[in-house]
Length: 228
Image 1 (tube, rainbow, N blue to C red):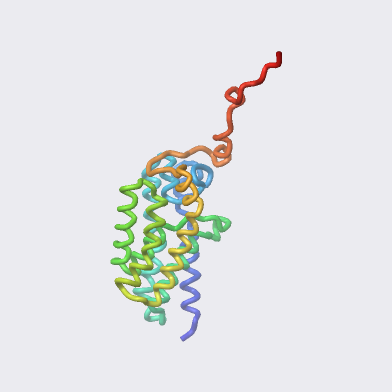
Image 2 (spheres, helix red, strand yellow):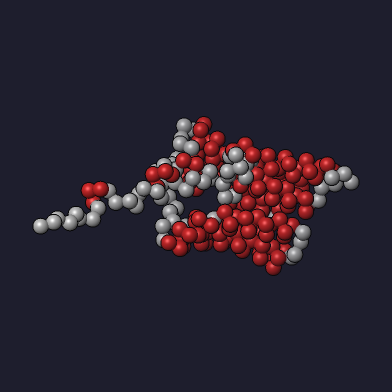
């Protein structure tokens, strides 16, 4: 069997994943570019910080769909081209990589939480529900979306291995989980420092301004010494 269908499916999934719906939705709705405020991450969580819930929900749905649809297409139509469930898993990984490193946006993408959720939903709905339940529990108690995403990503490969067995798709799932945790490195540092934003907290200041927030104003600096 030719490798052409597999390569084509992987490339198409990557290109679909490269569509940054956070940026496109914000432009269409007249909002600021999500890469210019808050965490600078082009994802639904940062779009929510703009104050527009509809824009955030649209971004969330479209980011999930761009992970879900390529995998579903391979599962439904792939067998006639010799594409297996393992191929479908790596097609999902390709879509996820497109979100992280989008060719249409200078390879500067988001963190991939919604896209990974879409991939898992298409691959294994039971695994997706178990992972989303972990996400929801951590979010309900902590109010930190980043912490919930990290915990859910870390548990996903273990759920797959312990409940559904060690299958070839496990490698693709584990790689997505590792990349997702790695992309949250800055969030981990802020969580440890106690400066991470909680769910619903606005953070629309330009990124360049964030670096100057902790600098004392000249009027509020240390008192001058007076010489007698």
